[in-house]
Amino acid sequence: MNCWLDGRSVAASALPPRTGIAPFETMGARAAELPLWERHLTRLHATAARLGLPFAPLPTLRAAAQELLRANDHHDGVLRLQLLPSGTAVHTVLTTRARSPITRVRLLPTVVPRPADAPPGDLKAEPRAYYDAVRQQAQDGGADDGLVVASDGSVLEASFGTLWLRLQGQWVTPALDGRVLPGIGRALLIEAAAARARHFVERRCDLGDLHRAEALAHGNAVYGPRPACLCGTEPAVAIVDSELGALWRDATRH
Image 1 (cartoon, helix red, strand yellow):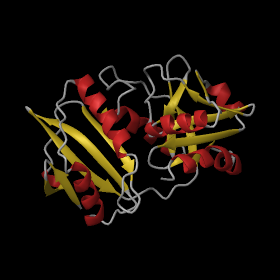
Image 2: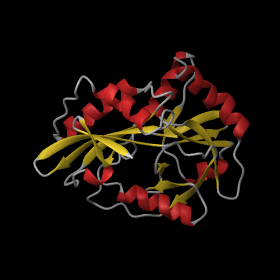
Image 3: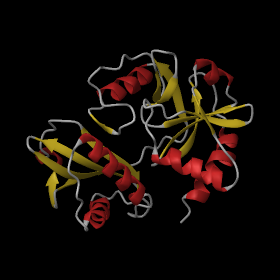
Image 4: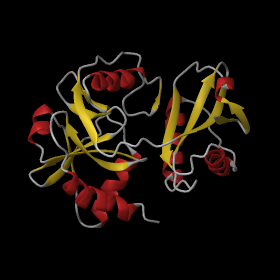
């Protein structure tokens, strides 16, 4: 599998070791096109600035990303764009992978202490050891992804997606309080709803909300909103698809 490092194709084994916090973006491809590229690039610029990392992407970066998707036969796969601090240098790295076949996401609340040295929750960056532990704990319990439960009982997000809950006919998502990633897919759905004079509720959520919800969804910029459920229950597929799914399809149609 080829990777792209600062303008040249390399093997994954040739990538330099990370020596600091490394921001990254993951985006879904369609026929090697990257429809949300500009949104991801904007967030990566903001994250790099916050971390004090230089980021001046080559004008050919998007074309290089598309070529890598084709070369790795991931035309409809996932692209990862990362700034990789290593020693005194900051490298730009592109990698690709296939999409997950999961269409319905089983969720499990987890109890994993967040290390003091982990990157802030509102940054998409490595190291990801905390989120890896959340996901692993959930998978050990038979789920696909884990829900981050804070020490105050707040349910914040999944390890690789935004949490959506339908409560009394209204879609709710945890508020951006500095502990939650401001997801690209999250923002796109909120904007799409507002354009149709519909609005989501952004507020603190807890375990009680999870159990009271009429439907759950797991969303990110790669897959959009996928029907979700707690282990031992069934997802409300029709509700998620007809409401959140319809919004997503409208927002990403072009």
